[in-house]
Length: 146
Image (cartoon, rainbow, N blue to C red; front, side):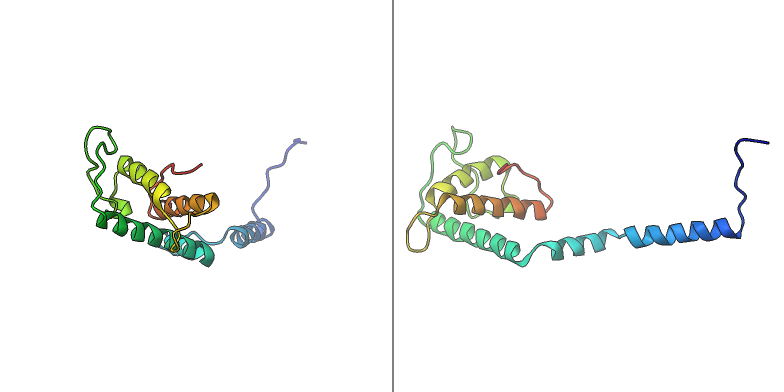
């Protein structure tokens, strides 16, 4: 008598396989298309986080407009020997990484509340996190904060 018996596929085994497939579908669900994944990602971000990101972008926009209105040009720029090639009003997604680092440093030092007071350090950190989140949501992974 053989030690191992090969199972025969009968009605009982087929029903077991169908149950296993149904069970796997219950656990994992149906495959998801890329467009569905993008829709899910956009709704997966909590409202408070979305509002914080929009606030951070508005603060950046307000600061960049105010900075551009001052007509202060920084000699040296990002490379140290030529003026910065873009203005802070350049859209964030179009700004090269070197320029972003340069202007982000200026932003952190210059940004203030509407009443002129300094933002607390945690708020500055939250603003930088807003920019990081904005980049990641647009498929750009930068190392603004760790």
